[in-house]
Image 1 (spheres, protein in one colour):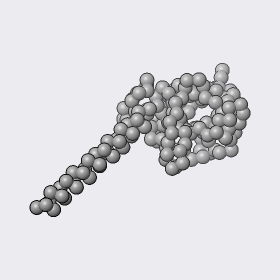
Image 2: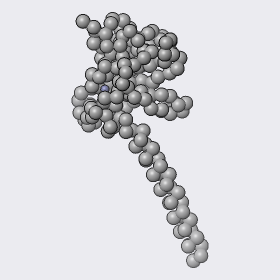
Image 3: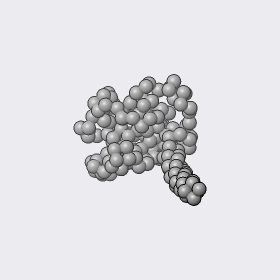
Image 4: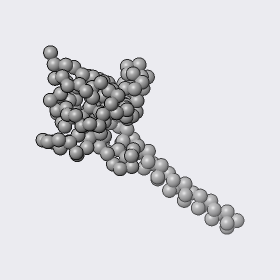
Length: 168
Ligand SMILES: [Zn+2]
């Protein structure tokens, strides 16, 4: 009898702890996903995105995937123009800020003003700064602090997440 009471109170204690943890986990997940799922000015449902994008672009833009290095033609794009988001066509980078990083991904040392937002991700355990299109929330790449002057930044971008508009 006593033992039963003890067990059941222990169980509800554990349930209590679990609920607190679960609540924290869910709310932190929500904060993390907000930039991708709801608060952007250009918002589509999952199925609409799938119709709009190639499977490769969908995997990067909406699932935070990474394309294979040297797989994008935009890695070698050297013309003048604007690199825009493949999800919503928001201009993100000017060709004058592009440089050859040797990584196999299109790289830039500066983004256009007000075009992107960042968040910290822990996918590789070591924290990295993820960035995404401010308009549609589509994932673009990661930004590192080993870029060239004057900013010292290296925006390492998935080519499949961009479209190039050559200057006319
Ligand atoms: Zn976008």
